[in-house]
Amino acid sequence: MLEAPAMAAAAVEEAAVGAALAELAELLAPAADEAVRAGAAEAALALSGDAAGRRLLAGRPEALAALAELAVGPCPPAARAALSCLVNVSAEPAARGPLLAALPALLGLLPGGPACGVLANLCRERGAARRVLRGLRERGPGLEPLLQALGEPRPPSQLGPLLCNLSQLPEGRRGLLDRSRCSVQRLLPFTQYRDSAVHRRGIVGALRNCCFEYEDHEWLLSEEVDILPFLLLPLAGPEEFPEDEMERLPADLQYLPQDRRREEEPDIRKMLLEAIMLLTATKAGRHVVREKGTYLILRELHRWEREPDVLAACEKLIQVLIGDEPGVGMENLLEVNVPEEVEQQLQRLDREEEERWQREREERQEAQGSAPGPEELSR
Image (cartoon, rainbow, N blue to C red; front, side):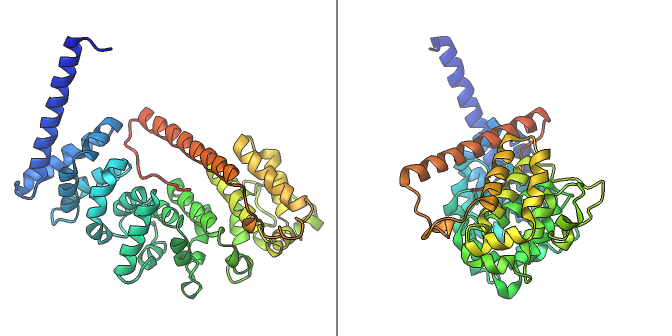
């Protein structure tokens, strides 16, 4: 328990911090001089560089509102600093409400990378993701501006996480699975995108989420989309196969070069395996996945893999492919009723895994002295 002098000192320090933040909010306000606001935005960006500073800023709705206004303002230096600060602070739950209030302005900045970063963080929460999707539809083209940005020479790295987090919702998945726009096909090349692991991770997460829609499995596995080689190729190494096995593989997975490297990020390898597992939910899907030599790629991956979580996912998928077909009434594994207590336990384990991964990520970033970018994944 704190002694009286220590408690008094803590109270004084808290009051001083509160006064400083109140002053910062005033300097960010529209009534302040433009140069003063730009300087205040830089100060806010510096403050957002660590967890304690982000929490302090997140508790100041008036400062967040002023930063959002600056982000869309006519002064580029102030706008850049304000938006970069919002990318960092938007990971804090307390910032969600004030930033969603500024949603129309933030949507107007899409598909710029920092705006994608702010919205990716907000969309980790399903209610916020729903509001963002509604806002995109109200603007007219829905997801189309984001999908068009995939065609840029260097798409924003935060675009992948944003698409991933939007696809946690059925309506987000429907947008990506719009057959008339060839939407999901535009994601496929990025399963091997080497310029940004953040973008690649988000895209693979979005594809995995799309695979929850089992009504689209036949189409996803058909020649019109041909998703399976794009999911398998990052899992494939330089191993040589006998000729009879080689002929079973899709053309893109045959005769790979000796310097071929597998996906280097364990969590991405795991999501690729999870996506393929989802595609085996139906009897027809299992048939296609088996026929295209998936087991051969998984066999070699299993020999190479060292990460326990990825090995477990690989073994589960192999069991599905080499095991007997489910009994009558259980042919569609996504329609099997899971007891409520089991489902709750699985959800708890999933949350714990995500929190562990996030803690490790923040520890690495703090060790490197860098502020965090947007959260990549929602489950």
